Length: 105
Image (cartoon, rainbow, N blue to C red; front, side):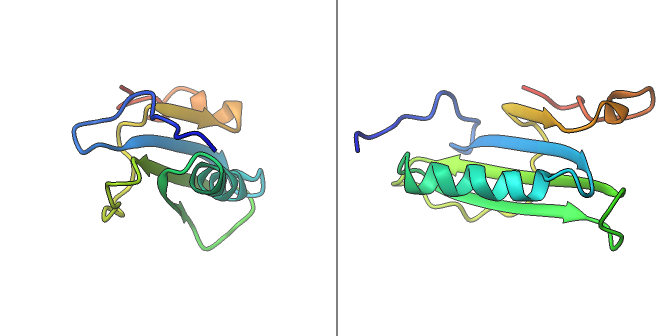
């Protein structure tokens, strides 16, 4: 496997992804798959965690993924506020009054 390079990083050296969804559409699982692929197949350090309410189906879900170069450990578990990539799993999240897109790089 050749060493992969992150396309861009923030001031902390992270490439960050945020997935916005409604419970039951798979954002949490998608985040886990993306993070695992980045670690196992691209050789990055990776971190994945999610934020969701007690009611799984239908409640807002955010999945956060962070990658860094193998030489840089990830010791940051704060939510991704300014992602390099934003995945929106349902069009209702783009409706008026939603702040999904705020904070993009």
